Image (tube, rainbow, N blue to C red; front, top):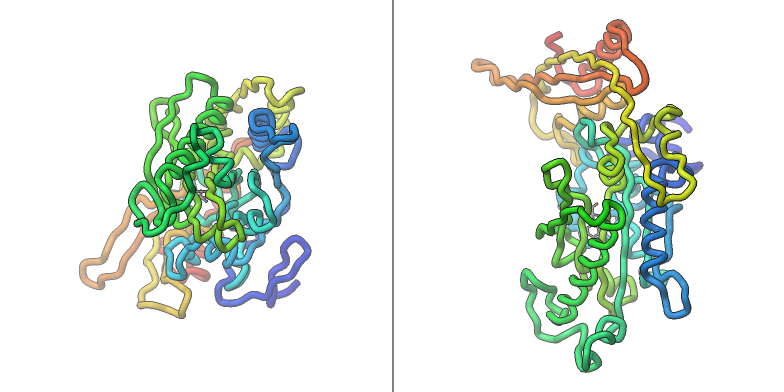
Length: 415
Ligand code: PHE
């Protein structure tokens, strides 16, 4: 313990100029909502497992996909980024978007951080569930901790082509190829098309299993450094298209580095909270952390396939309070630090207001015509999930935020 180090899951990590984890976030590490029986995230994980166990059976009657849900969320930056071919200067590494224990260690930002180690350990098909951590904006669908399920499946030449007539004559790889929007340079087009078909079929069946036959799905092309081609699946929900997962054909360089260079693979990563919020009409992401029996008891079904009919708890009234300040002046500071970012303020609000804060939005920005100083105004919406807040308790929290913004972020209050 102490100033010099951060304690997580019984281990100690030396602090350095990258350290930015907060006590509030560290308190969530180890909660493992996805492993708490009858928690809604656990319930969705179990339904996904059950679907894969019953739909994909190996030659000896064994489940094809193995399931891993106990890997530590503390990973190296090498695992979270480098192992996935994310370049050293990639924006996703920003200190402002991640929780670093120090320069080399972080709370994983996605379950993809484990792809390479699990492939290297010899697995050909696996699901991996876990908690992931990102510094982000604050509203009813964003929270600094959420949960993902990663899926990976590898195919040998025989596995991919054995169902195709005369498939033995096809091959996964071809020399002298070029990278195109359809495929990577070393892949054959026929292999990639079959793989893409299998990936989309697998995910369409999964989402149909979860949402029912009537669900509307569409595929959108996108980009990830560790897959190509890459896609996002969107599901139509209350009239809007909502992104539920990212996926694609794994970069061959990743498989080569994991000792599986003779195979091709697909991977996907889906967010459990997103699915649960839609499936059960849960209105606010903070509810997943609620200990309130009126919330939790609704998910205590006998059988994971039994329908849950979630009765939304009536929401208690919100209170809102604005905060305005002048941003710190001055140019670039020390290496590795960006100047004031909006995420720094969101993080500070989170660390003081905790789950009382429902939403923070930037409502006004202003540059003084003479001095050129910039000022911002944020609106903070406070709401408790389980009771009505009083003006006094909100004022105490709000004043503490005002003071800390000045002392920790170097802003000058216009309070
Ligand atoms: N890791 C990606 C994310 O968190 C999702 C993803 C997983 C994309 C696997 C492609 C393959 O957004």
